[in-house]
Length: 203
Image 1: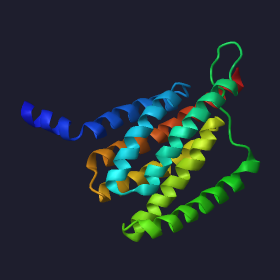
Image 2: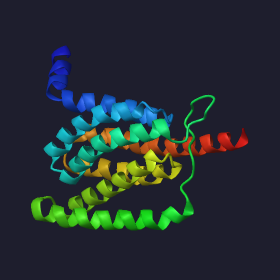
Image 3: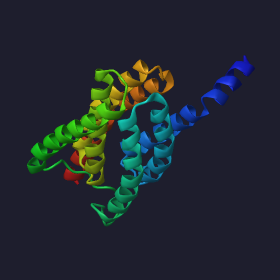
């Protein structure tokens, strides 16, 4: 039994390590903790490799962007919307004037990524479409996270759900399960961030 476990760990250590780091990141994001950005930098390296292996090239690209954007996000979070007394993060709602640009941004980025992918990817059409959509959602959500908008979860939730399905289709079961967990926790993350806003307003 032990040999089977050790063999499994040896053959899947990248996925296992990435999953652990991913769960730590998700917990810190759930808590709106600034150290989530440090963890995300490390996590990005693992998922670049994972998505490369599964042929989800747009998703691989998001983690290259994720690495660079995490540095930016870390800096912005340190400088932006912090309680002067406690140092706690101040979470806000997205401004109404940003809603339409966000929707248009997701659509345009998805189309651009799809047009690029069909030139290089040999995946079935539904995989390519899903890959482009999840990448677009994550790109825009990451920008929203840097501004501490609770509604970023409304993009992360469907992105994690579709990523989980795509990974199962590509037979990466472990990563598929992980992203399903991400999907579930993201729902609670959105609830928690909205609760944090309510708490801030009541102070």
